[in-house]
Length: 362
Image 1 (cartoon, rainbow, N blue to C red):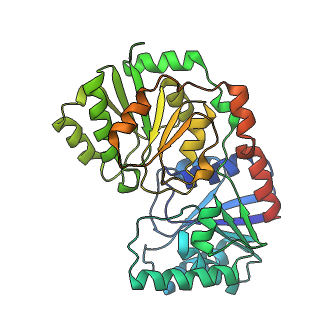
Image 2 (spheres, one colour; image 1 turned 45 degrees about the vertical axis):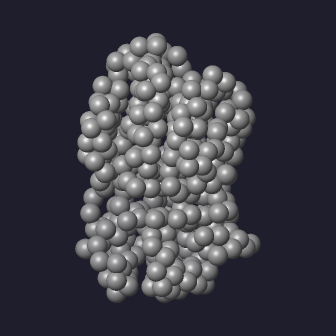
């Protein structure tokens, strides 16, 4: 039995979590056991799904980020549920601390995974020192370094080397084949007519995703054509603030809010344009998913160019909201057929990616 311990802060509705859950679904090897260590010490939204799939979850006794607390909890998990063949850390620069503890505990394969190019942190002297120390620890103790893009690898690890691999955020491509029936049924459920052009955004209501900018653009659109509708999917700390802004602008009848969903392919099929004005990203899974359904995408230039996979993706700077409106209204943005989509996204096939990851574990 090969035991792999994934280290997360919490299992919530983020792209990172869904990537690893997809590995769990597609590993097709009963001799590999996935364990999850939660440094926050609290349950997440995806815990039940992971447990149903056979994953085993272990919680830190509290969420203190001090080295001594992390070491005490991680050592206890390794001692009680190990020995582990692999420790795979997904917690940004703090992976340096995790991999050192794993090395001291005798874990032979240690992986740091870079999922982001930036997380909004202020670059104070203290922060720069922390990143420098953790980068050194990652490079010293990592057997392998995985990253969603070259930009993410360079940001977290400092550079690429022979032990660094680009591991794409994969999806099951066949789930994203456009289905007119799925589109028609969901649009009816949501109250959209054939005349409505639906703009969709899927993501946490946090500063990174910049819903404020999206609402401003949508407000300009409705002044030109009241047939547009905005569909916002997700939860987060800023959700109520965005709802209040929409109410103040008189847009409540034009905007639909949905909670976190497990039918993202259907939602993308029901919409007409996917918009992502993020302030920063690594390689967002939801953008890969959107391109999987062939839907036109308009995204900010703060998203890595590695994420642009289809010919109907428009990349814009955020210094001109009117230009975003013009691009959304552009008639030459159409949905790409599945054969072309599947051909362009072969490197994001979850089955291929899972095989690669499992091979490194073994």
